[in-house]
Length: 184
Image 1: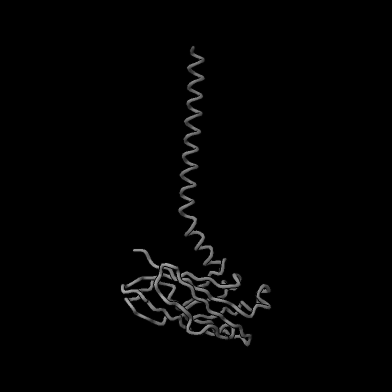
Image 2: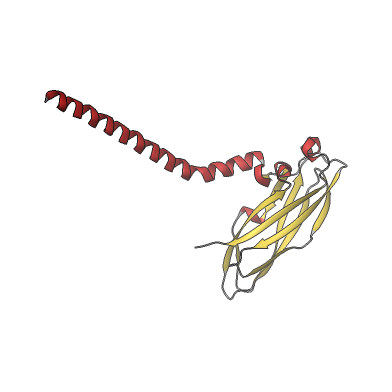
């Protein structure tokens, strides 16, 4: 009888230990799920992975003779009553040269609407070298009812672009934005 009680105690200890380990595992997985998005964003910003561009305080001091074409693309979410398009569809820049371009946005609604832009660069590997000094994508944009505005992007292509063997024959880079409404 005492052996039975002792065996039952050991089984209870094992069951409690297993439940504790499973609880810790579930909490760890839940914590990792919440941390995944910010960690992925940091990873993309540092590496340029997935066409994520870089931020810079000022332009490059080195300007190369090599020129590349920058194309601009614009999209809006279906539930955003805006028009959004690049003022220029493409520009040619020297690598390292700072360039200022604009996108035009118009709110067709009879109410004020906030939007936020997500972006990427194609080919993805070029994102590491695409540096934005100023961009409307850094903050939410408020367009009042029927308002239209031009929104700036000041950028340059890092001179290290010319040293990347994956970009040796890439002479066109596309910067694409998609605007989404900000849900209050």
